[in-house]
Structures are given as C-alpha cells and as structure tokens.
Amino acid sequence: MNAAPEYNFAYLDEHTKRMIRRAILKAIAIPGYQVPFASREMPMPYGWGTGGVQVTAAILGRYDVLKVIDQGADDTTNAVSIRRFFQKTAGVRTTTRTEEASIIQTRHRIPEAPLKEGQVLVFQVPIPEPLRFLEPRETETRRMHALEDYGVMHVKLYEDIARHGQIATTYAYPVKVADRYVMDPSPTPKFDNPKMNDCPALQLFGAGREKRIYAVPPYTKVVSLDFEDHPFERTRVAGSCELCGSGGVFLDEIVTGDDGARIFVCSDTDHCANARDREAQ
Amino acid sequence: MNLPAGDGRGFTDPVHESQKCFRAIMNALAHPAEPHPFMPPNSGCGALGAEAAAILLTLADFDTPVWLGGAGDCGEVREFIAFQCGAPIVADRAQAAFALIPESVSLAALESFSQGEPEYPDRAVTLIVQVECFGVGPWRFSGPGLRQPRSFSFAPAPDDFMALWQENSARFPLGVDILFVAQGLIAALPRSLIVQGN
Image (tube, rainbow over all chains, first blue to last red):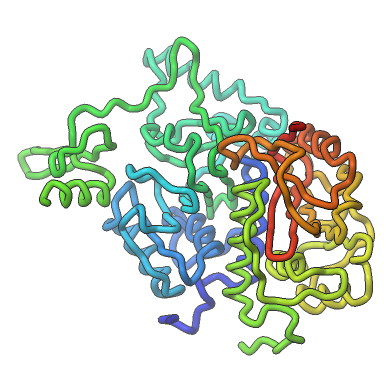
C-alpha cells in the first residue's frame, strides 16, 4: 500500500503529528483563535502550503480521499505537487470531485459544490494575523485579540470607504468568528466568505512559516466585518463561464491569444467539468 | 526502526491506530455535546478505561504533563502512562495539559485547572472524564459546532454541573475543554458551548 516505506505514513513523525493534533483540538475549542505550533521544515518551500500540508498530514488516514485545489483548480502546479506528495508518502486515494473527498486542501478558494458534514477543508495560510499590516508587533496583536480590541480593523475598512467610496478589500477580507475573534480567512476571494458561515464541514487553517493553526467548527457563525451603511457585498460576478455557462460562480480571466483576446471561465475546475458533463448528456 | 513490542496494552499499530482515535476525538469536538462511537483497539488498566487510555496514547507525550484524579492516581496507571506515553505525572493540577477524572461524579472546581492565559487561551487543560452512560437532558447546549441547541447529559453527574459549566463558559476564551468517555463512546464539551436548563 505504502509506495515509499522509507517515509513514515504522511511524512511527519508521530511526535510532530501529536503536537499538531493537540493544536488542532484547541483551535476547534476556541474558534478563530490562532494556536501557535512548532511548524516543521517541509520538503517544499514556504509559500507552497507547508502549513496546510502539515495539518493535512496530521489528520490524514489510510481511508481518506484527498482533493487538493489551487485557486479552485485541481490541475495547477501547487495542487498537483501536493497531491503527489501525499500519494507518495501516504498512498491515499485522491480525487478531483468535491463530493467524493473527505479532506480538501485549498489555496484559497472554497469549492462551488456545497460541502457536507464530515468533510474537512484545510486552508493554506500565508499571513494568519488579520491585524498584522495594521500592527506589526506580535505582542500587541496578541493583546488586541485578548482584549477584543478590533477598532483598528474598522478604521482600516473606514479608510477604504473614505478613499475609494467602498470597502476595497477583495480578498483576505476579515471575518468575526462566533462573535469573538477576528480572523483572516486566508487570501480567499471575499466571494467565498459567505460560504464559511454555518458551513457543515470543519474548516482548518494552517500557516507553516508563521507557525499558527486555527479553525472554524461546523455550523459556526462567521460574519464579514462591515458597516450598517456600507454592508458587506459579495463580489459581483458579471456574466457566466464561457466553457460551461455557469452563472453565479467565481470566474477567472484567461488570455486566449496574442491579440489580447480573453475569456472568463470557472475558477472551480471540478464544478466546470461537472456542468459540461451534465450538458453533454 | 523497530519499536519495542510493548506489553500489549498500548497501540499495536501506533501510526494508524492513533490517527483513527484522533479523528474520533476531533469529530467529537467538532460535533460536540453528542456521543460518538469510539472503539479503541487498546486495553485499559486499573481505573483507566480503554477509551481514556486511548486518548492519552493518541495525544500525550513528554511535552504534556498529566494529572491523575481519584482512583486514577495509582501505581498501575502511573506505570502505564510512563511506559506507553512517556508523559510526566504532576501533582499540581494547575500544571497539567491533560487531567484524568476516572469518576465523573467527582467533577468539581474546574477553575483550579489551567485555564490558559488571555493572550494564549490554548494553554488550558483538556479534562478526560470517564462516565457510565450518556443521555438527553436536563441540559441544553448551544454554540459552535451545533446547528441547533442540543440536549445532552452524562451520568453520574455532580449536582452542580450546570453551574460549573456556566462559570466555565463565562470565562471564555479561557476555560477547560472536556472529553467524556463511556464504553465505546466519546463526547466533547469545548469551552465555547453555553448551557441552559431544559
């Protein structure tokens, strides 16, 4: 079963897995709070999802079915290499179909197909601290979280409105989890923020370089920060996918020729393929 | 590397058995206040049942001080934990990362365990509490992980458990998290849940 017996199952040693597992459990008990963990060097560079890979490795079992997406796509470099990594080190079954997967690792989209109870969504996170660009000192941001002092985040959103007439943040849009912690949902487009609210699946977030793990349990309130007179708006999606015709989904712009021709297609390749299959039948 | 064969009371296939147990624990915490099946492959020892032992085998090691309450504090259990987990046993309950409470009726003084710190609420204890059985009512829990409020109870329970838990959730984000185990079952109460009377 194990293609490479020289590795422990899923690459990490058992002591590391225990340490990550303890961090995951505390993360679930304190939704949205960033639990520090002793992140390991992984055989891939920072920025390639070392945090997400460690979380996946700690929860993965022999009978799991793994899906990995990179901006919604199953077939791009990051997704393919992480999928191969777990095929090699754990020998697990992989899939591109959202509904078949028990664990979905992502940077940074949430699949279009609704997630189910029992599924785990693992996010790769570059900067876990939503307040980091407003307050660079870790000691200070820790205290701000402890005191629930999030005024500075609202000032930032207000400055967006003052400068641009609207909240110009389009990804990594801050959310408040279970009425307590302000959390960075990872650089997922804000289009996906509403999917985090009351989601039946467990959402785990791993930041390898920054050594943090956090979680949103199933059926948890996740609210995008906004103002009464400037409510949160999901990114408007004009038009539909040129390949499958889906509307109301997140679209990627693809350049199709030297003359600057471009089309918009589904960012979620699994959703797009399914829609085209259904049409063909 | 060949691991020592052990005495047959721990995991025989530590990699996959601890993964399976961990997923059961994680699932119980993600879907709290609800008994879930938990069939660990190991055996228990003395006052330490197989289910509570499996949690320690899965999560405890030399980084996690363990506190033993009541009948759990005996030579047999100490030896089991020292041999199987390598975890230090501490006498001061405030130092413990995991605390074993072999009889749920003796659950008391939750604030005497480590509650975490305002900046680091994750540094709080996880209580492992052995119960005889689970049921519904007389308490209703709500919070993250629950789509709607859920009736949940365990027996034998201390008379003032509702007050204990109300105090615990009032300390959120500080507070203790509890893993309850009965034969073949596990249920969790993370500190994020709030309780009301039925």
